[in-house]
Length: 282
Ligand SMILES: C[S@@+](CC[C@H](N)C(=O)[O-])C[C@H]1O[C@@H](n2cnc3c(N)ncnc32)[C@H](O)[C@@H]1O
Image (tube, rainbow, N blue to C red; front, top):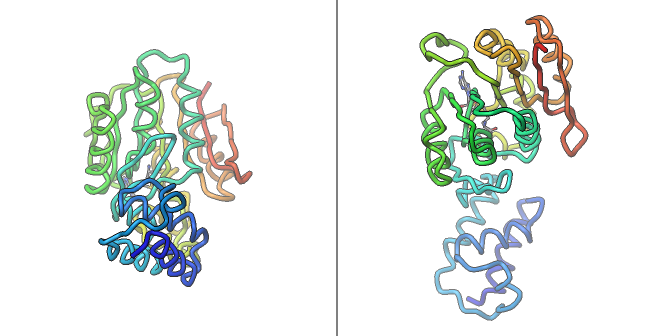
């Protein structure tokens, strides 16, 4: 089959399934599955493709709303390429705001020590370690799969010597067992969707792990727990840095205020939504 014909077939499959950017996704699928650069589709449309079935299979799976990241097993985040598998949350562009703000806070600190709760694919910790060369991090997750994928991503960028991965349930386990040194910061993009909100999420998002998304009845349960459990491990000038959900800024701010955090800053994402909250005592 000619490359151009295959491209059109893939676009049509995606269009029929109402995928938002069918042309762009078709280009990505062909690039990743056929291992050819995207421009070939325009510069060499008559190229004969013998093994085209896999590209069509991937398009068919995509038409069933399997996220593209799971099909091509990768996602770009903060300029790095992350390996992704089903069972971990796919990194979101809005989380880049969190990484950027934390890096800004760390600019003048020497040899800082941080901790991430709910590391997932490792996108936050790996991006921080990659960009702050004297940083060390602990990264926790309840999911073995998340820890495994983070290890792969940290190894890829040669960062494992500055990252300690620990299986930990922040809702149940005892922080004392972690034997933590005093921390400069705790960062988290925790599950923050309430049980009711989950029902109205797009089909595609529901293909991602439920435990990475749902917090509980209210949505802010994880912030309460993380602040309560880690506040006494922060250094005097230490800070919490959280990604927050739509309309959660005031609730999360009040959780931190109740716990003695006075200096609270809220930042918006590119869509103008309050997305990141940074809080310190001084
Ligand atoms: C919203 S995802 C964030 C993943 C990643 N940090 C990111 O920004 O893409 C939340 C993560 O918290 C983890 N998690 C859920 N419940 C947890 C718990 N009780 N203790 C620790 N981690 C938990 C999930 O496995 C998931 O990896």
